[in-house]
Image (cartoon, rainbow, N blue to C red):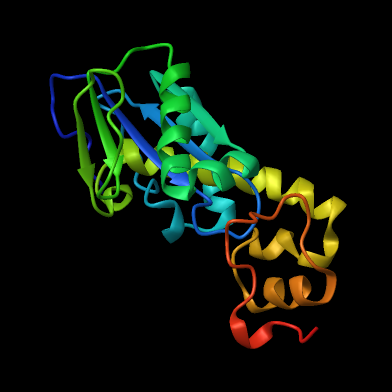
Length: 199
């Protein structure tokens, strides 16, 4: 069972992102404020759950949360400001939408760009420690997955339905055969050197 909170008194928002290591698609981030007494034995780091479990948990999180929101940063923005800054911006955009203003932020990872005057704690692998960060990881992941599933219908060659635009062998092979799309991040190295075609 994950921890319910870091501070029992403060209104805490857990934040996490999804899609940072992908070759295509936007980066999503979520911010979630859970009640202090929230319990769920299944809730965990989204990477430790199946697709079915994440889909089951999403409506539970959304209905139980005091406030939640998802922020998105486009491929064009990622290429302009880099993926690290894009991840911070996605979290900021999620926080901007919260209907309840948090008093403290729990950030998954080791770095964050300060949001307004709200204090924050960076927690490595926080999505496997605190419920609110785990909840944010699930919302960010499922909303991004939904988008990549839609894009798969338009660009089926890349098999995004199964790799969600991560740098899998099948995705790399499709890039080698078909080139890149408008959804690929041009600032990312799409193919390793050994797969470059000779011109």
